[in-house]
Amino acid sequence: MQKTVEGKIVSRIYGTGRGWAFSQVDFADLATRSSIDSTLYRREKEGLIRRVLRGIYDYPRHSNLLQKPVSPDVDQVAHALARKFAWRIQPDGATAQNLLGLSTQVPARVVYLSDGPNLTYRIGPRI
Image 1 (cartoon, rainbow, N blue to C red):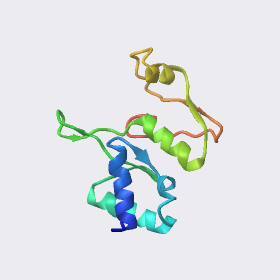
Image 2: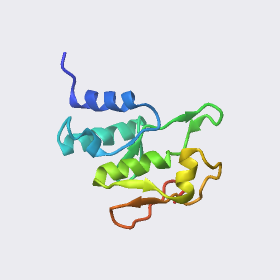
Image 3: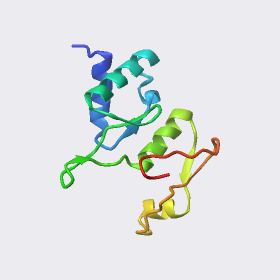
Image 4: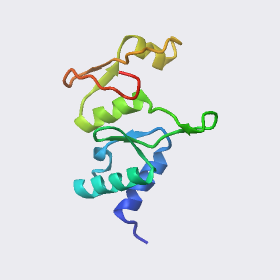
């Protein structure tokens, strides 16, 4: 039995697990841009995925303690942006120390070095 484009996209989202951030580029091998956009739009309206930034979505994790979805993982969003625009990125300073587990300090401003343009994004309360 052959899957529809929507089924393939949803399967990939489920297969990567909760917390995964993605863009249309991550599904480019499955369908055309317009069908991917419409599928993601419908899934967002259903509440399956959440729009984090323009063109970036995530499959939200749920907190049993808070009984609501958790904020998006900034590192996942940064990598989704890098895949979308074909940038190479690398965490810098306190961000790198925290990701490597060398420091328990959680930076208020997450910084990545990139070969792309110098841009700032706001993801929830984090910059």
